[in-house]
Image 1 (cartoon, rainbow, N blue to C red):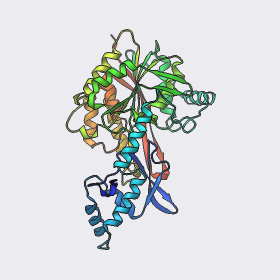
Image 2: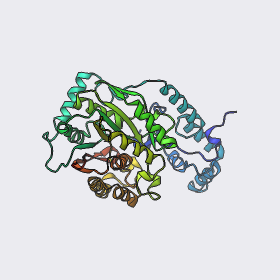
Image 3: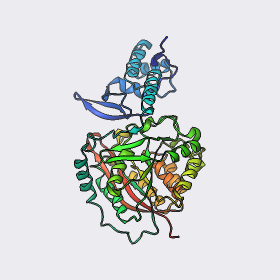
Image 4: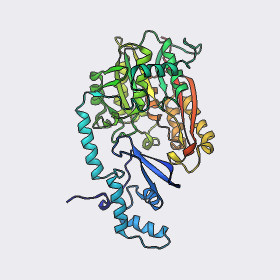
Length: 417
């Protein structure tokens, strides 16, 4: 017998879907999509179905949902069969976290696991797929970098970078500022530890992959030996598969600039970090989390080897504000508070103070959805002792959804020996 999601004890939405406000056929609604691609085209939800979405939290039973809808209708009848039908429609669209979604995800993961190379997922969509056109676009962005050379307030060798992972056009000033610093990095790194945000990471604090990464600029080879050591160190803290890497842009965009800027072969250690939000109040830094602590120690050992020239790069964005990201106020109304929060995070990062960085997110309860928080916190742990220099800070506004995303570029330097 097939058990539908509607018959589950407490139906809930998938944790990895993205919902954002839209106007469709003159009516306001919410469009739903996912990074895995199971939802082929965004699904638009309007009217009473929006109320239903808010009730799918994994705690309410079908009967609870039915009774709540009756109450919200002022006593007008809503039957369990009606609710079951709506839930089955959501389940069929891969919006609910249930057997149908889990089965489809397992098939995707198994198919992806057999591949040796992670293909460029966004070539021809977010940037040109032709090498010559892509090189021209990257050079145009990089031409906006500050004048090359070490900044007078830089101290010690360059150890790491943080750059945006927003789309290339919106984040151009941040990408230029971050990757412009590589002109002053000598000698060039032969190992890049690349951190990103696992937007579709399901299970674990991090996702690892042994796949090489292909872009229109060529093949970046992954240091499989290091990845295997990290997997052993992480244990259950690592996701059981590497499906989160399949369409993740936060690493892919960085790799384009690294390949263009370095102009030479380098080994890659790609890591996607999940959310630490549920741990903000019970620990004070990533290295207090089982599995994460061991990964950080392994990375510290890797980058300290004298036969490697390592650079840690994080593709991160900061605050995500407005209705698109779950707020009931516009980004313009939230902008001042979000920017103040961003600045406090960046000041802590500049001091290399991971506990202050963590405490600031705890203070606001991750109210501004800083999706690069985990990656930046781990940069501070892996590179400690380190100081950071802010290179750029911007917030881009999306007027259609009354929402906004901020980003920064930073360079991290080790103390002089």
